[in-house]
Length: 608
Image (cartoon, rainbow, N blue to C red):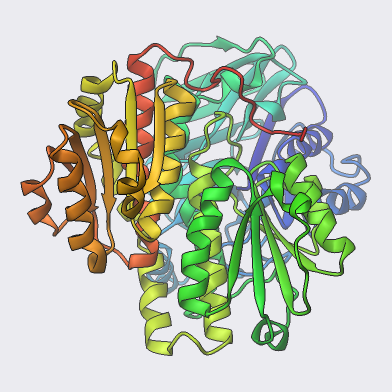
């Protein structure tokens, strides 16, 4: 989501900024802008649309003179895509310029305060608040102003800042949004990601939360939030881009698990406007949505488990019949394409070969295709009739985590939008679901804060030989994904079953000490699930239950319980999935497995 590049040094800055931003295009954006200090004033150029528009306006940067500047690619959150809302933003006399990644959650309160003190706002963004707040606190010392501003901001941010009163200086700070510093003989850089600066340097610093950095052409100085100088360790990137993106986590997978609250927020929030769901990417008219008679959900691997969840949600909320297919099987079973059918393909990379084949098969029969994927400009994004991006950011670990959660969020949004359009979802129910949907990021965060309990339990099952995951209804979909996570990264044999099917053969595999993970978040199925749990307990199984926080009665039937916050029953899979991800991760780490690169697996499967 969004991209920041900044530079100060001996080279002309604008071409460097444009080049760096081009390396961050995968992050998704709808506008871009540059701010370049020419020695007297800050010159700003912004453009809606592709980065090429900005490049053309500046003749590849040649029209902007100066050696210090900041650049930004924006994906709209607060305010529609426009030149006015594009970054950089500045104070009223344009002596301070700011680029920002993240979301300022208390910006309305701060904006109101600033307006009362005579400040005027030009944009609809939360970022402009930062520029005016810097102006309010600035008293000749940029560090003190930045420190005071940061202590007023709530939310996530990575900031690049210019002050005309401090020529050839570039300031930056971050909190929960990535930002790195690159150093070279010809100057120094800030960037959201390593790829933006690898052309110029391999030497980077990683900024920790609430650390301020002052860049000059020939040196870099780091400060803590109290403006005290601190020392940082320089890291050399050996052209292994993935190694430069871990951000201090032991594995990408753990980092990406922890990025899920932000990824969910970035996927959900921009599509909620005026207490309604707006999916600008969807070209289906309301009449076409009302006339839909069938939807195919088609995907591979974890994305297929998203589709299983999507079937329950779409049929329950929008009352449209849904068929779920593995992409590798779809075109070979001679599917029957009828009028008023929609195909939805789901892929993190947007390059999955089997999923692409299904897309093309459907289009060959005149069926409209909606792609849900994470990579801007991928093949699925280009070839689908419509594309709904998940905005999870780059996902390096082979085992998907944050992409999975954001795909769930996309399907929740789609089902609710269809349900409201088809009037199968009452307005009151829609409003309740919409409010609850927006709480998911915080509820995921609350689960992550109790990871130690999950890690402690996982340590007991490092030597497990077989693990079974069971659930009913939408919990069955969670079981499928929990089982896949376990087997693909820990190499422990693991299977998922609809709990009601246990007695049809599978229960013969349960013996003394076998671990059974039971997911039960659907209140109307509690009693039946408890019966299934008792069946495996009577055969010697050790039961791990994942359930809603108020279902304490399950403790009588289970050996260990992980509680998740209560939510709408359709959204429960999103929350139940988090402890299952952590469980699989910690078991795999304990077994010494290469968590990020499991044997025999690839991130993007581009062959059938």
